[in-house]
Amino acid sequence: MRELVEKGQRVIMIPADFKFANKGIVADVSPDGFTLELEYEPKGILRSNYCEFYLETKNGTLYFDSYPKSIEGKKLLIASPAKHKFLQRRQYTRVKYIHELELSADENKYPITTLDISAGGMKFKTHSNVNIEGEYNITLPLSEAQSVTCKYVPIRIEKGNDGEYTHSGRFTYYENRDKMTLIQYCTKRSIEIKNK
View: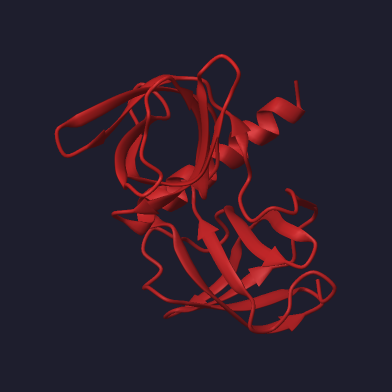
């Protein structure tokens, strides 16, 4: 465990019901697990119930499933996981995501075709001349019952020979829960794609 997790590392913890997602800092590391000090009260997190864990390391995002052995207030003793995986070197997992959607700013609406998304941002194509200086509202459908609404901020725009623009940009969120929802969605999609 000591080779993977270090004292002071930031951790995102997502239980089965992601609305109880939490984050914290590693307070101590031992051969059989680590102590995690949470930012918020551990509502919806039960002893011996498996949760997903995400940590940023120099080798990329570390992902594993484990469970709290003990819960004392905001301090949890997390069991050493049986296995783990590094998702990728970029900060957020990027997955193919093709949808006909709409960006909006004030009264203006811009039809777009998304190419891929991550919790950090997205890439899309459009025939519309979207201003690189603007901020745009977007709703991303993740399933029939779930979607995430956030702001899109353009970073790079390339014009193709066909007159179509390819945009890349980042998301800013109204609620941190939306970011965690998108992290979980992209991670699960990435694992599903690899297992096909």
